[in-house]
Image (cartoon, rainbow, N blue to C red; front, side, top):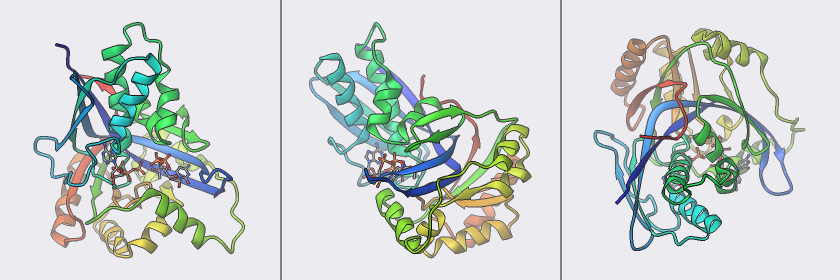
Length: 302
Ligand SMILES: C[C@](O)(CO)[C@H](O)COP(=O)(O)OP(=O)(O)OC[C@H]1O[C@@H](n2ccc(N)nc2=O)[C@H](O)[C@@H]1O
Ligand SMILES: Nc1ncnc2c1ncn2[C@@H]1O[C@H](COP(=O)(O)OP(=O)(O)OP(=O)(O)O)[C@@H](O)[C@H]1O
């Protein structure tokens, strides 16, 4: 019996520029995704019916209580989508091992969906008929990037991707919060905070592109930007303390990752990241701390 394991990375958005709400409820974005070395693993194995099992990855502090083990799980939806396109029954057991914080703004569910797409395609599609990128975009705006990885700019909902050159490895610390934030609620709060203002179309940043291309962490730290940050702070004001603590402790830059509430801090080196994580842990401003590097590849069979 074949079992296929795929791992897929978390993301941090090094720039998230959000336009006004569209007719369909989404927002046009300039979304600069950066894949970092926290990986969820999904193992797909033939079974009598679709089954989902979710656990923390060995050694990972990520709590997984409340992650759906039915069709509410994005990996289950991915398996059904692949089966439907190929005209087969989704008879597969998906074992999910999570190292990406849940509902943290790091696209853990999207990583699992991307991993399940690739694993199920390998199980059932021996001739490679599927356009996995198109299926990924149907599942969620962040899913195509979890397949692609690296650093990339996403336009439209974030699903129209173009890879961006990066000149080196960046070292990150991630501070998770107690409790998550709902992505639609954060976008709605962003609209509410800006309702009296003219909201321009989303914008790219030349300074950010230059910092990524040169690999200069100081420049990247200064260019980090997230239009959803004020909304995440409005819904979880305690995040301000976390961001300020990281900056006071010497982070090169700090921002809320995507829709939050995880806060991301850029460090000078792997050693600096470890020291920063230890100092933040001592301050008690996070549920737990994770260190990771980027960019890393997208969903990969292991
Ligand atoms: C915040 C980010 O994580 C940044 O990468 C993404 O924009 C969210 O991506 P995601 O979780 O894959 O989101 P989806 O599952 O596609 O959409 C969930 C909800 O988020 C909001 N949403 C999402 C993407 C987008 N460009 N505009 C939006 O307004 C919508 O309310 C939508 O109903
Ligand atoms: N495989 C999965 N892993 C985690 N959560 C999942 C999964 N499938 C569905 N969910 C549901 O989706 C919600 C959001 O989970 P996820 O961890 O993807 O959030 P996120 O990282 O904030 O997403 P994003 O950054 O893409 O907006 C969870 O609260 C959970 O109920």
